[in-house]
Image (cartoon, rainbow, N blue to C red; front, side, top):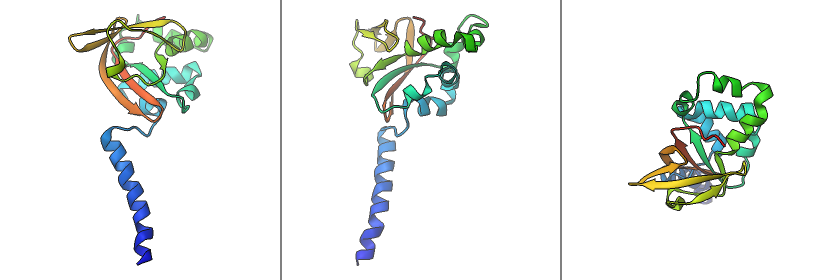
Length: 161
């Protein structure tokens, strides 16, 4: 009967993994999650071009306000291409880091009137209007995407420091 117990461990691990996915406990890092989501592909490419991809794959908890592809489409024509050029890497890195906040902040933690310091060093301002969360002038369009090292909130504009 001991052979039956050995078979239970892998089954239990598989059940726990499935339960974590169903419960919304992400196993991917914020960078892996952003890269896997079609609506965040432009952001993931910008992170890679900025050279800070490894910073989003650490185990340090963070909150990422990730602009959707449509948010990047709202930039002035040619601005994204210009930012992606190698000689603009420092500027692109500042913009990406302006979307990152140390620590995990779920939508319940984003209080109206809050001012939060970003990894870039400047502050973003939170407003909650009729249940909608605004980050500066960007609207949170999808919230609380849980990842192994934090949480992602998708926003409809690129935040510029």
